[in-house]
Length: 401
Image 1 (cartoon, rainbow, N blue to C red):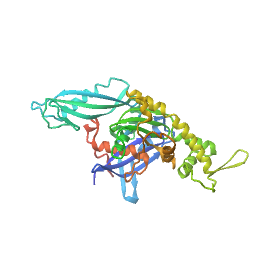
Image 2 (image 1 turned 180 degrees about the horizontal axis):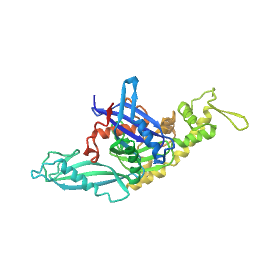
Image 3 (image 1 turned 90 degrees about the vertical axis):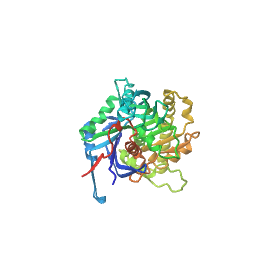
Image 4 (image 1 turned 60 degrees about the horizontal axis):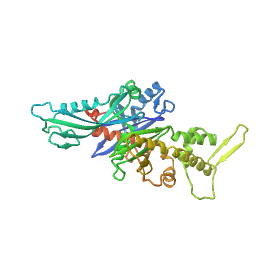
């Protein structure tokens, strides 16, 4: 049995955990679980620290007698939100220390340390450093650290992922108080892009649109790596409020209704009542699929009308032509696309000049779209993509008790 990795993501409405390993470059999930934390995180800011800590302690203990599974998570790779996410590129060269000019781990660490010094913003914290190439003095190039190669120098080309220091501290302190050691950190757009990179049918350069519960994140991905992010405060929550207010039902009932019926434009003479409400005077109002269709489509039209500005700003900020916002391939993920019929409606009604794909987690044990970031984090932890997280062995994050 392979040793297990744990990956935990805190979002605006849930904490998600996967436990598994990677075999022959394929993720194998033995357990996946989520826990509601509504009201504890708002727009990716933790507003109920103690509540999140308690939820982490609860989710870290896994017991499933049906499959004779009992796990206690002691260490985990964590998925961080992309608030203030920035990517810096750095190229540094260091001299090989050994008299024999054999490249050793110390030389790679020295090169990474030089890269770290490129981040001079005191308010920024480094999530990880992602090397893309190592070059030796004679021009030989490697995608992995060229340990044991002979050279007088080692040059590293790497991307530095940073987020605001206060955001990182808010999240990592919750894990510390829950007695879960952070073995590695991954920002969510990078986790999603690495999961997408496994699918050869998906493009390698695209705009990633994560339609989450309370926020929608746009990331520009080139060669399977994110280079920038923009965020708007809209998502599934807005649709829940719209249905709840229109039908006079709770948001929980609205979510159940959306998951059950979604958008359905099939022609039918039979339109049964799908929801009812009673006003303060005792008058009853019935609602059909047509009423739900109207609410959803109206919301989506308003929602997608907000997309162009952040997409253009994202491309401009990284030095690209903003016109590409209308032509680059789009990959959608997140909770909103789980509503039945929304994927088909997006394809039929929006972004008609662009290639559209949807990111799904088809890994056994984590079949829902909302686990994609966790599965991507598992792949990163296994491959030790990051130079900082590579300093330690990231295997063995879960112990059987």
